[in-house]
Length: 372
Image 1 (cartoon, rainbow, N blue to C red):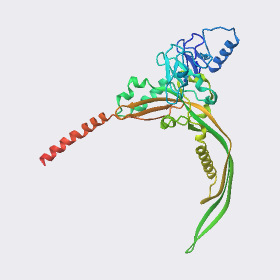
Image 2: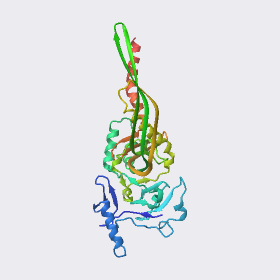
Image 3: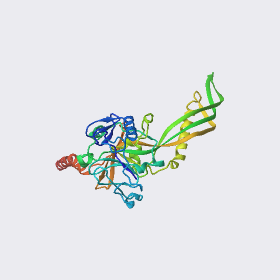
Image 4: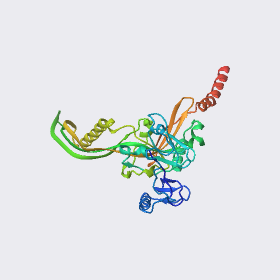
């Protein structure tokens, strides 16, 4: 297991991916670098003289030969499902606590962004990612606008300590693509009515109707994380898939990422049925000008099926109501700004509203009743 960080080549400060500029920005000297610049500097360092250089453009492997990061015992690194796994922060030495499905996180003490490289190996390495396009400040403004017109929200939900917990998370999704070759044979019916004298006539004409075509289907999206709130992860869909980028570990610097725990086989039948249904409706929509259409036979052959694993950006804020023991959430699509959420209600404020409206009305009714 290797723990890696991203450092500024100029001053050695933390590099974080900046959504607005789509570049890596140093938190100290404010230098900015593109992915291509970092890769080029890395190549130069690797081909240059051996030795330690003050600026590290590419993450460095801090692990020992046995695959564990320095300071991490075998028991710590092994972990089990649902149990915390401990890592050492390469910046301050503090322990980082995460779980087995987390692939990137922060040190809770010095806030140094770290990436748990071993979690992203082999089949768990995403093929694509959509980098954050909305930074934290803009996400906070969207949140403030969202709750601005909402009344009777507990103050604890939007307190400073609570808002500071807003986190940029890369959630895992499966993307399904294929080609559909469809054919439909149907019967179309046309009716023609007319009246001659006192007699109404109806003419019925029947036609053989055939339609066929090929449809390309790209990036049907499915949530690949079972532990996530389904509404939170799916409520921010869709993403603009034309902006998919080849995955780079650097995108995770400064954000949290989750590793998938659901495989594509779980969604295979469901997605195939959805795609066939969509293709069938598309063919039917091409049949026009008939009073009625009856489908006799249709085939929808799926070809060139493939699944791609991708990470998508979401800003999240969660709140646990201590009275109801329920978790409420706010989610904002980190690319498009689309929001979804479920808000808690302050029951005390609602009771005060009830009292302020109905108590005076009750007194008036009592007075009127007394005189009557």
